[in-house]
Length: 381
Image (cartoon, rainbow, N blue to C red; front, side, top):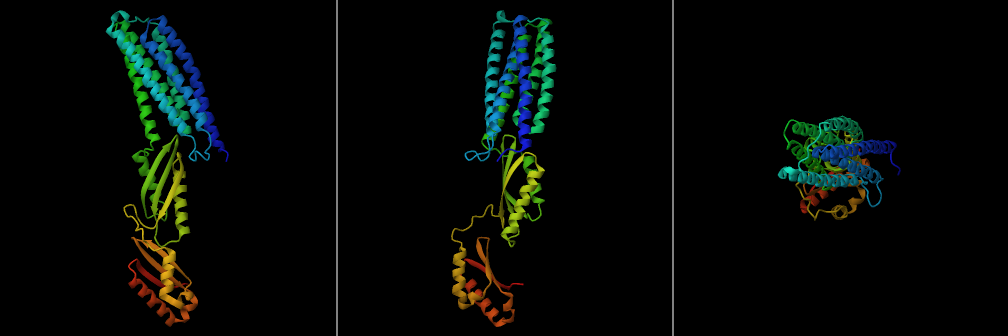
């Protein structure tokens, strides 16, 4: 089955936004590293490496979008969105490694003052240009992330903003050196490194939670419960399980309905629950609904409950030749016991004696078998 047109457009938008960001990151990384070396600013060089890491993240995002956009197949029935999640983990690890390198270099310069770089005042202009361009990229990417519901794109947006913030730190560090504080530039570089590390760790932890099928946030789950309970025909809800896959959410739930309704009516109620959840929440892609006649979350059904064939055998034995007179029988499995409803054809209303005999035989069957809690006999209308 081909992908919906809207899904294709969303993937194209994600790729386009990421490519624009990649071009800007190439420009910024070249400019900042080059002028950081020329004007002797460790903080600006660190900021340039940060922009270079943004470029690496853009490449990861593009690859993840390409592979994650593939349709579900026999081997991947839930699709390929976890490629985006794995790419986010890789991005977080790379950021953590880069931050460690920057921090080590800056600490070495602090411990060895002869290695301290003396930045030029002109460095501030490059950092200011970076702040403006990266803040624009943050808003541009964030709008696309909200529209496509892409956590990976949102992470990349915050990557852009972290670069803007790190450039602000560079401005402060360079200004400190110019004002007579020689360690300010190196300290600023370490602050940038810590910021990068924090972003990397956050990306890793959030993605690992998704990979191990951590539930959706509690407030989100409470909203899901509310929608389910408002569905007509639903009497209760239990065993609600949720998980995230890329920008999509999946829900498994057990709902409790009237124990006496038909299978088809229970099925329709379950379909209504599924439809309401998908309509209410944009990121819910699929819902699996299990319909229960009672709340059995903490009740384990006995393994020796009578099957339909066994119930029929007992009815035939108890009713004898009267068994041929019944129209049908229905079984209810409730509270770990079996209840049987025997339906007689409406034509038997003219044979009250025979009806009474059938009721007596059924009552005797109920008394003789502990496994059968109740046997009701009624005339079909």
